[in-house]
Image (tube, rainbow, N blue to C red; front, side, top):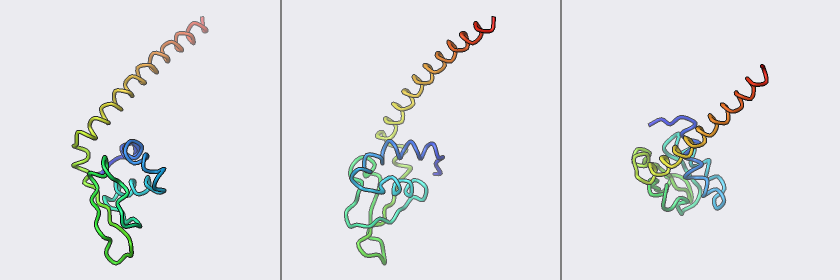
Length: 117
């Protein structure tokens, strides 16, 4: 599955950003997982536990000292209730914001048209 940049940005912000404060580079690792499906990370302990981590498997990176190979099951993640719930809530929020922007635009257009009379 190939994701678009807006899709990648949404997933990074929603599911990887919270790890950034504890693990410098978590967003870069997330981007690698979302674009390549895998990432090699220094350390012997998985960074992502629970949540998105339920869809990321780790194994010892062959030929590298104290590194793990991360592999994401993107199809399972995208199809999960965990993901769909977050996506649905975000879509609803965006629809509300969009409706407010449309209403604001209409009001400003009326003001603009009234100024041309």
